[in-house]
Length: 590
Image 1 (cartoon, rainbow, N blue to C red):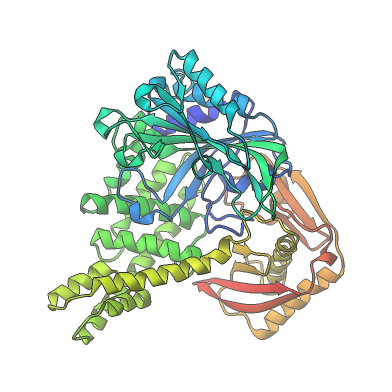
Image 2: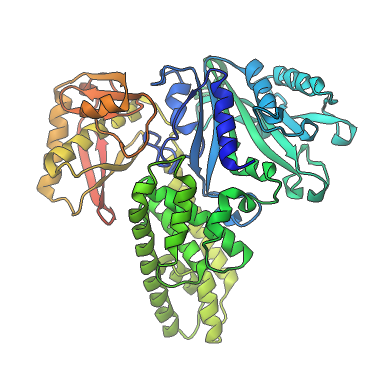
């Protein structure tokens, strides 16, 4: 079954069960300060999972969400790890729960006509085993037992697989989701695994868990049941609105459905790989994954830089370029065309951006060529090359260790790679510490402080457009309880008088104590009303528009203050460059 058919069947299956089909959100989260990218289908839906009405008016939703995760970037090249992937998901916003979710999952997986037609005898599941915070998930166990029994399969609980075990209760670190931060919605989940067959190792569990190392049992779907709220004291209480959040990786399911051994052997990648320059197997897979991810990130407004999202994009591009062994960027032309052609029907915003996407990638290829030349010159200056020297080349010039090793060998110089790894680990630890500020507020933090900052970004956006020009567009934002960071398009450094004028404009609006109102309308109505939004992105049938008095109107999921007078005094603390044509303002509320 081709990937397009898997997508179609999934969405049709849940549409027939009352779900509204919604569009994928952008890869750059609009209102979640805790992540660089959309990493799961739930991220864009957090406001609705905690009670805000969805613009569609529906309580049942389904989608195919594009996602980027880079925590496993060094694993790309094996049979299943990717940086960009698509997540199939269905959602209940306080509507149905376990009694519907589990039977529907089973039906979609096993039904030959409307679902995937997988062999039920090759399915295994895990559930929450219970602990002092919450009891064992007996209802999920009962539902799974019924599903197996109705299919004529013995479904022992807590039994070894060899003795008929199908349902395996696991502790919280195996079958519990959240909260993403210190507090928030959370609950048990149930994970569904598929047996790939005898050619993939022994059918076992390691320490009671699915043995991923053998490669035989592969997780294909996860159903999360958000029924608890964890407070700041660590106490768990039942949520008034219980939700269902599911996720199934399209690429992984396509691997199973197409009877191939890796995600790179599916129809999703074959046309891309056919355009790549010759390389070893791992290099080919890295190029295919990284360039696909880069196309999607650039299309959603990310540009190569040395910070945050831009740094991730730069790293992806440069790793791919390095594996290509090519100079310049002409070789990228057919690759970009293949990626966009494969996605054009699902994401129609891609084809109009093809020229710009290619230009961004080719410019980065030229910059990387200069970096390599600079790194070579640095190596030629040195008679010895310590591990720290090699790391300095990596950190200062972006010069890969693989090339440093190659050029050092040509000159008969040994590199202390153990020292390089030590320096690299120190750098990674510092990066993680710095990144902790990105995540410390928890997923989509809706504290009083962040809500005030969130509304302030709308005023800042409008002030910049009023004072610098309508070419200004939001390119990203990051909000914590302590400050806001706002990226915007502008070709030059702001002057001190301009910065002061923006501050004064925002504060003048704040003291007017203007009301903040919300309305739901179609994207066309929002555009005609003058609301700011990412209209290059394909919205669903309806959007939420927040209006601040007579000064600002913008598509947003919220939340916001009710009146601007509660925001506080706005102060810009820094204005700086992010990348070519993109500036960044950091500001605080006093």
